[in-house]
Image (cartoon, rainbow, N blue to C red):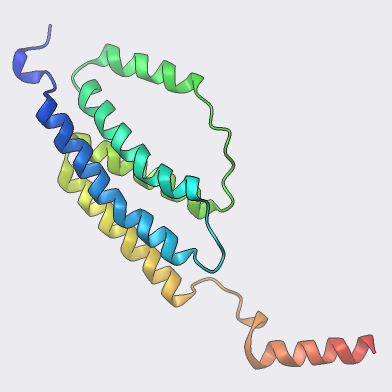
Length: 153
């Protein structure tokens, strides 16, 4: 039987949930900022905020009991998401906010590190337009388009 000191308290749960929300909020902001041109799903933005809060609360409750952890695993296995994600970055964001929620329930300072690190990475990739094929823009693209139009005519 766990000792009284090992049992989760309401204060610990509230702190974990607030930490999860506050550290996931910048992830949601960065997501909307970097997806403005392409468009984004409101449900994904809301999931980025809800999921870490729920995960933090569950981790606070489960971290003291192996039996609860296995029960939670069985319940989660039965739940299926029916929403499809348009972009693999959306899935990466889902993993990040789950990690933020788990960290908030165990070590809140780690949740801050995850949030800051992910946001810096996303803004850097977005600002640099990293990975975009250079052949599809600029003078080279104009010449290819002109050749294609000339060939078509």
